[in-house]
Image (cartoon, rainbow over all chains, first blue to last red; front, side):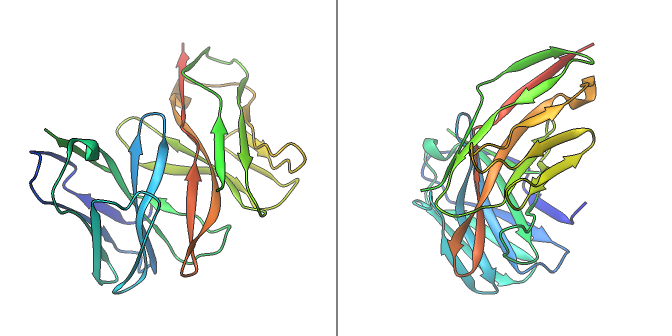
Length: 114
Length: 115
């Protein structure tokens, strides 16, 4: 199994509060991704990183920001959480970016915004 | 943009039954195709993949063939087990920009196998 951990695994927070989720990898992979999983939608890409300090937006990036100061860590921040951001968040990594390259997923963080 | 459509779930089968989960896709290019599986409380694991037309991916008794003519990648298994109960996701690779690839997922199909 790829060495990917996410923290926290579960979080309950209130509307309007900031929240930061952490993804940590031990594989030294260049690419890291944040997805959210919602019923009826599968997983959708929020943001991704193609190197240290290099990040870009995915299809559902509104209300989220990311940072990557080290190869192994990719942080997802909800600046002011809303109930629509209640979801399960998955981090993924890949060694390279070929179309056939496998993305490896972390265990997920279940976030509830009240 | 690119998209993936999976058969509606949930799907309930008896042990040793034959399984098919349909997956069709829409893409402008020639993406790679994937099946991922999510067991309860866990993240997604790659089950199998195919990178070009007519390729067959296989793993743990599951198979799927990349059919360009029908834009399909149906998942099959000849004899399912209780341990196959999980959510299955079909996905394709798409360019995300900056040289990265993103996965575009179907909505997932929950499979339950009864003993």
